[in-house]
Image (cartoon, rainbow, N blue to C red; front, side, top):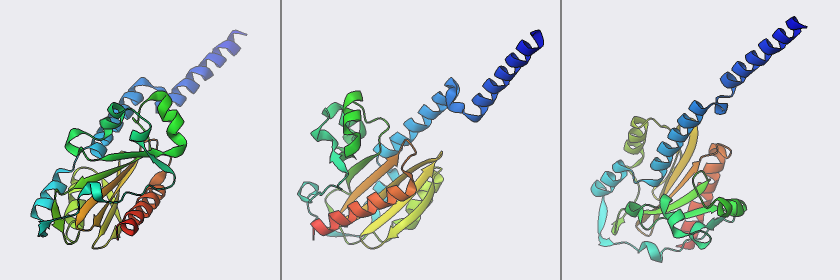
Length: 224
């Protein structure tokens, strides 16, 4: 009997060690690392890219004002809703900081009730629509792709271009196993940026590309 009990305890201990090794999310240390990674990537999602600002300063532009961001028609992809229509602005503003004051956050319609119950967008699959480049009128996005990719690689991202035309530049990014994507769309001389971040890692690059591509096409069709 003693041997059976000892064998059972040994098996239980080994199983516990194996579980901690195979499933590190069961440990506090892994949770801390995961949270740090998420916080870092969320900051990347919410903050402006320093390189992009520099590119806009040096890019060829026409000496006239573009259409105002507020006057751009902003159709919404069918499975998304505007977060500020359902949530307090202090919740939404955590993902549209003062440096990006005109940004609009969209969330998945089928996640709305869950988000409202926790009152947080912390780790949601969400779209951010931003206005970059000030009031300058840009002729095209030509010249942004290569230096921007080089910049992102320098920040530790794996990148992939899924569209590169005079009025669209779409790039997916992977860092620490997390997928995100961004597409820049030229609308009547103004650059509108759509960003997506797959925090839960359950949508994948394919879904990100699909949503960004379809939303960019909606913007272009609505404004021409």
